[in-house]
Amino acid sequence: MKRIVLLVLVFFMLISGASAYQVFIYAPDTLTVGKPLVVNGTTTFGIGTPIDVVLYRQVTTSTEVKRKIAYVQSDNTFRVVFDTTNLQTGLYKVEVPASGTGDSISMRQVRLIDRSDEITLTSQMTQTLSGKMYIDGKITEDTNSGVQIAVIGPDNSVIYGPMYVDTDSLGGFDVVVPISQTGDYEVSFTDDQGYVGSRTISIIEGHETIAPETTVTTTTILSAHGRTSRDNPIYFIVQPVGDAPVTISTSTSVDWVVEYVDANGDLHTINDQGDITPEKIVANGVDKPLYFKVYPYKYSVSAEVYLYTENADSVMVSPTVPAVFGVTTLAPVSPAESPKSPLATAGSMAAVCMASLFIQLRRH
Image 1 (tube, rainbow, N blue to C red):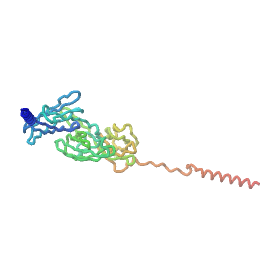
Image 2 (tube, rainbow, N blue to C red):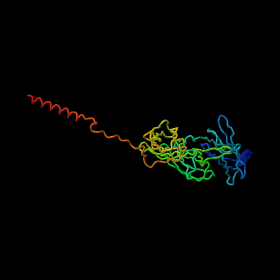
Image 3 (tube, rainbow, N blue to C red):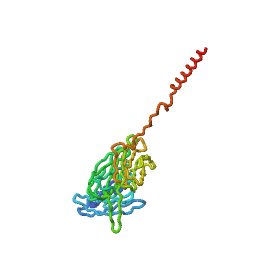
């Protein structure tokens, strides 16, 4: 009798174990804010069964952030995607509540991190339409390695990349992307640690815009750029528009020294800022070309520099050293003005002594 009861109990246990549904979910341990949080799952629930997937933020208690419903597919899988844009950094969890029994894994912890402050762009965030968009900057964690760059155009199509670009010893990079239309371009950066962040560069026509009852003039910003060092400085030529004030500024991220010759031919040297704020010069009432020489303050630095101009007709890199920066040589000194060397002076004194000795001998 006892054996019969034991067999019945085992039978019911097998039935109850077989009827328990299982759910397993998978999510990344860490994720950069802004990247989609993809949650994949498998289950023994039937095809078409709705599965609740909840995203919670965990501080001292769990707070529901978002909830989505997934439906079991024919291969017993399900999938949901949470948008993490604008979420705070910290610890979160994704969970399928009341998912079943047994060895189900229905909860995963995810830590959201923000690396966007690792990106510094030195190129202008607003550029005029010229057929090219310049993307220059640095990523502090990617020195001498590389970064993957992708560009999405105003029509949400990928117009560049994803493509790996080499970085220098400072994490600097330099990319020129062909473009053909105005609008906002989203530039995203990814390295070997994952997604870093994105920036938006706006491309404008660069001409006068007329609003209802108001005339708004947009200032055209022109730029030229090139690599420079203390041993090989770069030279720029800026042509003003009429005699309007011209504003000239450098890119940032490097402590630049700027030498320039004004319309009167006077030479000036500017090094008032560090590597965070650009050097800035305002030239008033000039109608002649202005010449600039730019190089890093540190001898160990060789980097790309941009020279930006407002109210200028053109700015370009000079192919040669402008004559105004030519080396000034000292005028030759005439022999009469030349200082005598110690040997010459000693020779003269010896001659005087010999003459005096000769005179004394004749007297005796």
